[in-house]
Length: 429
Ligand code: S3P
Image 1 (tube, rainbow, N blue to C red):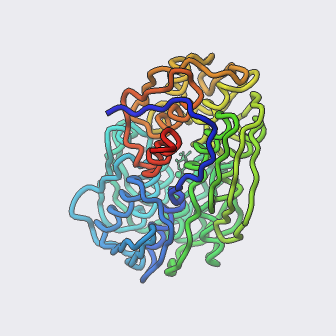
Image 2: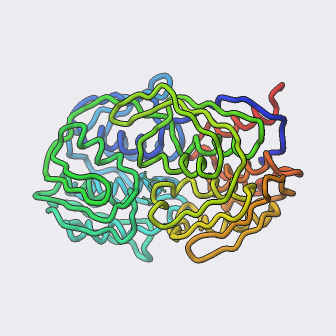
Image 3: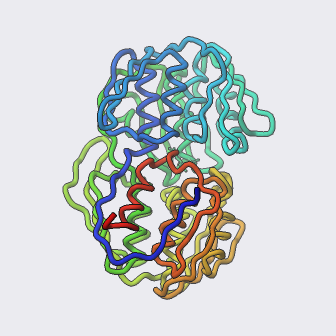
């Protein structure tokens, strides 16, 4: 099967969105650590979060799925029995790295692994500080499978070499179980869901963002929460409205956590018209959004903003290809170690659809079409869900459309994406 998209008449559409992937992973893990029953509403239904839930079940946690993404998790109260075999996190870097933090505090030896893509992704960034906290860990070649022997941990002071929310969160999850203070610096503008959850629950956490400290050990209490819709999934539809003149997208209950809205801000700076309504001020705030195209212009995105829109960069690059003038992205070298080398995959894809792009070591320089359609063509996703989704959106503004020649499992992050796209492509079907 191939998946493809093509230009369409202006549309008004309200796509169905999955719950946020990052928040769902964290909610599952916190609930798994709690003693008793937690209720999580609007969980992300994709394969990545399902892999985290499956790993928790292998660790003796009970999960029960209800209607509409509501999941009940019955946690083990901080001590897990040894799993029968290796834990397979599939395609999920977040699931694997966060789970390393949880299991670093458990007195047992566990192997964590994943699919072909995950088995190429760096893990030393998490293992190095976890070893200093008292865990033993091996990952030959700096990628899974990881063999981890957890146990008694003590707090450390650690400066993140890359502003990664995954590493920051793994250390916080270990810090909860450690004696003394775990202090983490250098998180920059990365997402703050872990520290937000802890602060809202009244746990001993201080600071957010670039400097956070947690005072362990303590027990997580069962909780209930609503997961907002995923802003990184929403970004594809915002981009669709931005590149298809005369179209409008409405989105309900999207996360407007300030550490996740930099992608929306960038689209606004590029000329898309966004409006927010019905804000709900919760631990994880949400609001309705609507987006319409404006005249698109190129922008410059530097290293300080990259952590806040790391997952949105592929689709922002696609929008840039249709803008007036140049878009320059710098400081995005981390994209090379995502599900695939996204710097290269985006550059190849943009060239394939006839856009002007220079690939740099840490970003791109993209020359926009000035609002005109591009020719389009056949694009390789390299098995990466976000690359495929970004270029399927590009196809809405390409004369000959876009075909993804190696369709990946888009279900990893958003099982609703393809049916939403189909409704835009075939409104009368
Ligand atoms: C995530 C953090 C980001 C992001 C990933 C989800 C998270 O990775 O790309 O999709 O949930 O913490 P890094 O923290 O490695 O940049």
